[in-house]
Structures are given as C-alpha cells and as structure tokens.
Length: 386
Ligand code: FPP
Ligand code: MG
Ligand code: MG
Image (cartoon, rainbow, N blue to C red; front, side, top):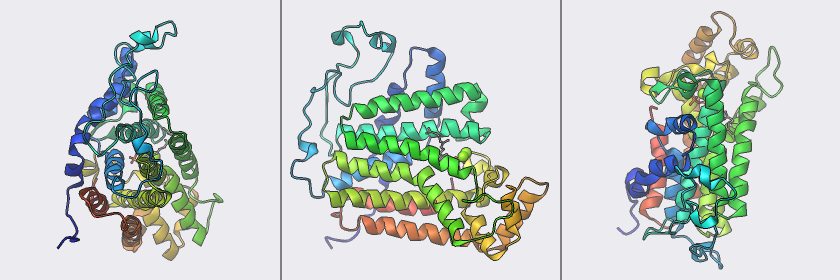
C-alpha cells in the first residue's frame, strides 16, 4: 500500500553526507599552531555517535518535502555572494595564519573556493549546520570532561587526561570560536541566534546541575518541583542543542512556521528522551560497554531521574541527595535503593512518552525515507546501550 510506513536505517538515508562530515569538521578545526591543531581534533579521531548531525541532516531532508514559505530562502541562495565565499568555503587549513593577517589581500585568502550545492536535497547551509552542531557538542564534551574529572571517553583517555585541563578547556573554546565563524557564514540571523542560545543554555544547564534541587537544602524533601527542576536542567543541558538545531535546519530550508515548530518539538522531545536514557544507562550498563566510566553520576554527586523517582517512594534518600552522596557508603546505599525501586522503569516509561511525542510532532510530514529515519532514530534512542 502507498502509505505503509517506510522502514529505514537512518544512517543509510544520509550516508553520503555523513561520509564527509568528519573530514569537513577537521578542516574547520585546522590551526597553524600544531599543538592546538592536535588537541582540537582529538575527539574527531574517535568514533562518535554523530546523533546531532544525523538528526540535522534527516530533518533537512524530511522538511524539504513540506510546504515552503512564499519567499523561500532555499531558492534565494546566490552562489559566491559573500566576499569570503559561500558556506562551503574552508574556514581554515595550513594557510590560516596568513588568512588572519589583515594585510593579506582578499584574493589570496583560502576562502575563495567554488560554492557547490551538488544534487542533494540537503542544502550546503544545512550540511554546515550539521557540522556546527557536532562542533558545539564536542566543545561541551571537552569542557565537561574537565568539570567531571573524566578519565575516558569513547573508549580512549579523555582529552583532559591526554593533554591536561588547560589545553582541554582552551581547545573547547577554540571549537566554539570556529563554530561561531561557520555559523556567521550561514548569514541567517535567526539561525545564529538559535545556536548562540544553545551555547548559553549548555552553561545554564551545567550550572543547574551543580545543585540537585532548586533550593539546594541539606535535607531536601521530595516535591513535584524535584522532577520539573531536573527536566528543565535536562532540556538546557541536552535537548536545547538537538531541538534548536532541528529548528534551524527547517529555517534554513525555508519551511513554514508550522513545520519549523514541528521540527523543534521533535528535537525537544527526542532530546529529553535521549538524556533520560543516558541517565538510565549510567545505572544499568558496564563502563566497558559505555566506553566511559559507568555509575559516574552518583560519584559526581548527581541525582538523575532513576534516583529522583526512587526518592519519591523512599524518603530516606533526601539526606543523601542533600549531601551529594559524599559520605562513605552513600553511593552504594543510593545504588541499592534505586535497584530495589521502580526508578529505572519509571525513567524508561517517561523516555518512551517523550519519544512518542517526538514521533507525533512530525506526523504531518509527508512520508519519506528521511521521515522514516527520524522515526527510526527514536527507536534507536530507546534501544541504545551506549
Ligand atoms: C555531557 O554530560 C555534557 C553535556 C551534555 C554538556 C556539558 C556542558 C558544559 C560543560 C557547559 C559549557 C560548555 C560549552 C562548550 C558551552 P554528562 O557529563 O552527563 O555525560 P558524559 O557521561 O558523557 O560525560
Ligand atoms: Mg561528563
Ligand atoms: Mg557532566
């Protein structure tokens, strides 16, 4: 039947674009300073999951088939209109130092390569957006591993261990700088604003996470606010990047406001589900399988969804939450209470509810491989083990 759901491997749908992703990102991260070059590109060597770029590419393709705005930006891209080349122009390579010398004449700068859109229904600006989301994500990981005193990421020593905290922080800042340049070149103020807000949101989420509860008491009691504080933090820390980049993909494609909103809701709900599953895996999966230490959240003093749900039925957890599991035996005790509770199950149920909402948001999109890929991403998020 014509409207039977199309089953698709999301990776296959955008495999061609994904193939160039890492190379393009590495190009965006080139520096004339050899050590900075190495540290900045460190996390691009390991195999990331590339969830965010994949979502941007799938959303770009899925929304290409939806209604356009009357004066679609999609049609108004003029090749070579910018002095520094189009969105595809390399931002850097070995010539970077010459480029950044203001005396270097424009004509000899390395930006003047041809603007090619290829035959794909994904715009060059959308492909670049996919790379920008991975840059921002990787920058946040560089900083996160310093903050969390991580020792491993993606089955290798984390950057803070390999190069030290100073270089890891600076490399993260460098990634944000290059992401900002690439973003500016998209020449879309609304998209720039969205992604700049994401960067601020990441920091806001991380600040909220420094406290387990809104009022940060020594012996907090469980209230309805406990979960909403956690969900607000989770939106800022994880769902903001996914939701706002899905929104930006639709904007760059010239979608109507309704489609832009649907793209955002898909990303928001999937992003929340993604982090809920992440918080669950921290309790249920071994460090070996995760590629990073398991059970890290309690050790870091963090009360995530499984524990917050367990706390509702076992009020003795309040004291432990208040002192961030810092006393001898606290982590073990908390782990036992969570295991004996329905906290993990409740977390899975909530994640499934968000995933269902994500699928519902894009329901009106015309059936396509890319839409099937977006739906499949939801299934993958629920099934993932790392
Ligand atoms: C991973 O979470 C970290 C994040 C999702 C965001 C971290 C954000 C910052 C450090 C804010 C400042 C950074 C930038 C670039 C604006 P996790 O520690 O729960 O997961 P993990 O187990 O993968 O370390
Ligand atoms: Mg961490
Ligand atoms: Mg962290």
